[in-house]
Image 1 (cartoon, rainbow, N blue to C red):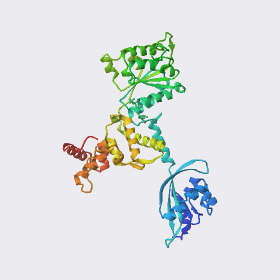
Image 2 (cartoon, rainbow, N blue to C red; image 1 turned 45 degrees about the vertical axis):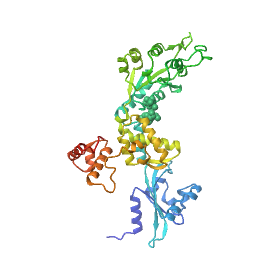
Image 3 (cartoon, rainbow, N blue to C red; image 1 turned 135 degrees about the vertical axis):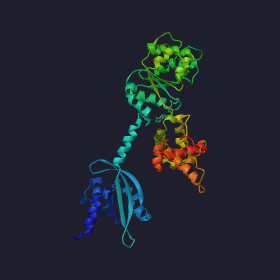
Image 4 (cartoon, rainbow, N blue to C red; image 1 turned 90 degrees about the vertical axis):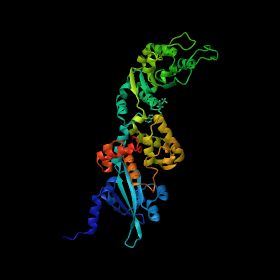
Length: 450
Ligand SMILES: Nc1ncnc2c1ncn2[C@@H]1O[C@H](COP(=O)(O)OP(=O)(O)OP(=O)(O)O)[C@@H](O)[C@H]1O
């Protein structure tokens, strides 16, 4: 075999890998720069070899003072793992790189520099954005198929002038959805005014909605504009519409039919240009049957009905929402919480959320009080959740084989959203074997539904 020049061979090998490799000598000069590094930086090796690293890699002298990777790595002899940086290459394109530094030693163990190894994360970043984009619509996060159907029709609904009735249990995102409809509509330049119809007694609610003239009642010294007037040109959200009295229902019906009303104590009719959205966590059809809600008003507000599923029926959204709330609280509180531990996530996946997304948001807010950085652990969750122990979780060193089996089965089911086939594949056992084991555990009262 022909004798091969080792240095040429080394360069060929370095150029054939997809990671960028930049070697820097102890006196801060660049001594090796492979092809991938050329691609990431847009610089040619002829231009950088022999130059000082700060001239090429860290143009800011301040950063060199405080954040010199050569100094850090050679002083601590530590590999700095997976620093993610966003940098602009010479072609002006933003690239996301995952970088780690390795100490370079000679044959005698003497430190002679560092090697910076970088991997292009731009593709991963694009995929992440595409995925999170697909699951986010006008600030509403969901990958649930019913929610995705709502996302699809939302722009058309927003554009129409029709009244919309939003149904859903408490905390399921009705107000958020109403806001999205308003923000996507032609009326977005005007106000969105929300009225909680359950929060005020009837007489106050009427004056709150329609306003009043001075002298309309004992305390009315000056006239006051109502919410319909404030929302003019925009949208009004009548929250908890199921709670309004029959008398007020008649007045609302007139506004919806004739687009006019009279403020309390006034004989002047006011014309209104407001789109009406209504929300409720009650079953309005049931209220109609009970004679508590007018049929004709129902048909006026129910031109389009959107129903938000409870969080317990869209558990696939829990990890996405947790991530969203962690990001939100990190920004609000200037924190650096990185995520949630597997154990804590599994508790949150099993919880049933009577308070829906608001409850999950409160749980993460609670966790932020106790968790300053790193991962949210079980101990950071509210105590009523911590007692909902995972099966087999109580076993530690003295864990029996059956305890361990129970725990592994449980965790595989949680990870796969209760899908037994996927859990069996993950556990490396046949589906029928898994099914048999689950049946046995359930019969013994050791496993609940996931
Ligand atoms: N799909 C979602 N994505 C992100 N955040 C959400 C989502 N749904 C709800 N939220 C958040 O959860 C909280 C509760 O939502 P919202 O107030 O819209 O619920 P609601 O159904 O109107 O509640 P209520 O019945 O008590 O009036 C808000 O902070 C909202 O931003």
